[in-house]
Length: 193
Image (tube, rainbow, N blue to C red):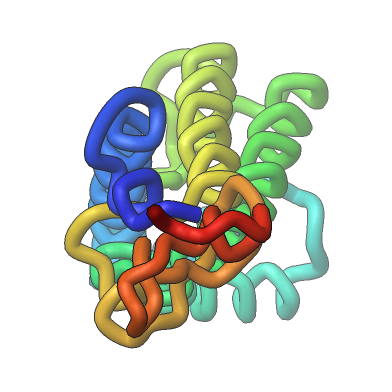
């Protein structure tokens, strides 16, 4: 792989990196804000999970306590660009669970607020479950994108040298080796003139 394609100096690789950077920063912000909004009132966070009527009370309370911490941790890692692919995958799994939970409220006609960003669990009017599921599907699309194309600008993955190309899973290689020959020429067996 040429360094110019690895760094995204033009065309699709450059656009893909820019899109991934925006998705990474946006999802980091969403998860940190969601976690912070819940962690400031853990009792409400526990009640919010309990209001879904999916888990026994004790398990719902454990989820209500750990979910904000997990959201903040995943958001912070994504903000730093550290372990982008695996963090995005974990976020995708959480979003699938959130979508399933909201869908279950809708199907069972339980009128409680989703509690996604803290706040009251009492719905003052019928919740717009379609909107909430649509919002989460958009976020799922962003995290899925990052799972496939984790290469972003301003990421610790770069500094630590742990980044791999999302397209082929290979480690980045410099455009030239120490002799100045291009890697493509080495691979094809030809030599520079």
